[in-house]
Length: 247
Image (cartoon, rainbow, N blue to C red; front, side):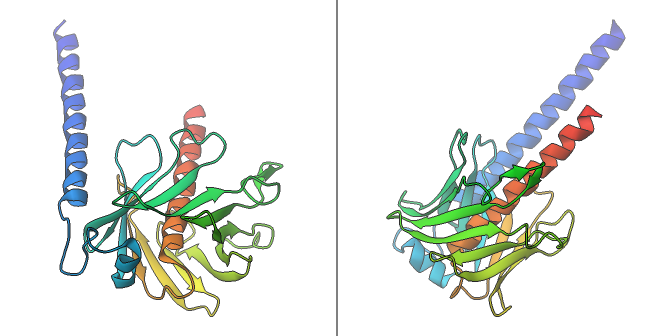
């Protein structure tokens, strides 16, 4: 009986520790995200999202803890300037909406479900992914996608940015082959437009997007790209864990 009581106490102690640890992360994120309303440079109450982006050299992204859908906070200079939210039940493909803090739609990204274009598998091999980017009025502004048939020989996953007429504007790839959440986005002249630094072990999937040149590829598209990559990594990690458990 004593052994059982000790075991129960140990289990309860572990559960309480996990609860307090999780609660601490949750409170810390809330303070970090909502603790600063403005700075001398950034004020989302008086500036539009576009104006803030023009003034920004770096964007920080964090995934909301305990969210049942994709939900990311977007910060500039430590100030919350927007959020990206996906569908609660993305059965027929997810749609990401980027909004400012007033709730105004800035841009949205959606998966294109078309043979040979996106997440279609042939003999268990993914052919291509393709995402369509639209502005607040529903006009197509560009695409983000893979060309796996052309890039089958590459060890790193490459995604390409296109304009609304399918003209290539740049490409993005990770810095390393495995266990990497760091990326670079290049324009067609091979110049680095964005440097994306991610923390592989961050519970909030935190990323910093350093803006070098936004004349070719929009910052909003770099944000969507980062979320797409994070989703791919999370999905592969879950698949790997599931396969390990089955063994």
